[in-house]
Image (cartoon, rainbow, N blue to C red; front, top):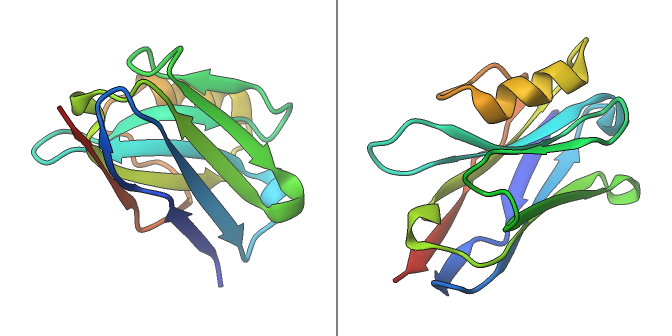
Amino acid sequence: EVQLVESGGGLVQAGGSLRLSCAASGFTFDDHTIGWFRQAPGKEREGVGCISSSDGSIYYADSVKGRFTIYSDNAKNTVYLQMNSLKFEDTAVYYCAADGAWLPTMKCMVVVTTPNYYGMEYWGKGTQVTVSS
């Protein structure tokens, strides 16, 4: 059974930090590109970052560049999203998703530039991040 399980969400003050985890199982982790998405109430889903399965290259949405960092621990089949300098507008449900894309780098570029993108094979159920102002 394929599973993506996010954890690490919570309530944090503006300017603070959180680290989200995405634990994957049930598929070949190394062959899948992993994306992080978020969705705030009443807003479209936004791809915030992506790590390509081909070479580990990482892409970020402009809205989080310089503040968020993605990294993976392949031994644990886990991808992390380190979020620093959090802002009120970062409040959302954060999802990780995986895709065995034929062109993983292209997939990542699509993830971080396409509004309301749902074209990933597998999705987690999400974890809530709330930033208080």
